[in-house]
Length: 46
Length: 133
Image (cartoon, rainbow over all chains, first blue to last red; front, side, top):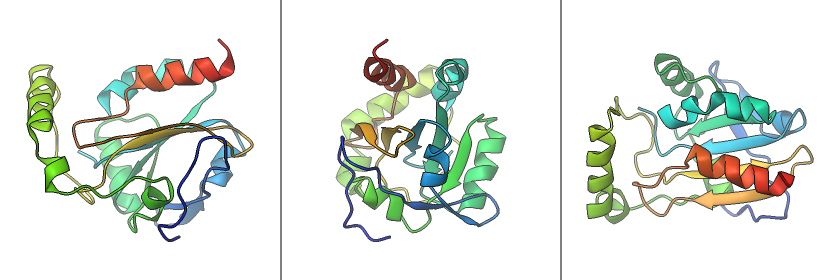
């Protein structure tokens, strides 16, 4: 996914692909289909 | 992370799934979350594509090292918080978003510099307001 999509309140959330602990790509939509989400983007971990 | 963890029960009470995204490999995200006993789903965004898609910019040195970030770092240290090894892109700025089950983005918060972090109380308050509580 490139950088051209910017999320706007009231619109659809971008269905970004993320990486789980096993290195597998997982779509965010798989999570929000199950329940409401709070996505917290950390500046870094540590 | 510690302040989010302290509000775990409040997120659970609202049936909210909290996903923490880091600008790193997924394995690093999972590993660090384990070390900090972070009770939420931890995923990585090594390419930064999700940060871009949600409008979270890459800061510059001026947004990472400024008087306010240093002062807040001192306050956090005085409050007993300790930062471990930094993993991932150090220049990514933070953000928080609420998404409903239909995939609609209900609320967005974007950090302006490295000193700002999404506070659990602010996220929960926003969620309650949208839920009409």
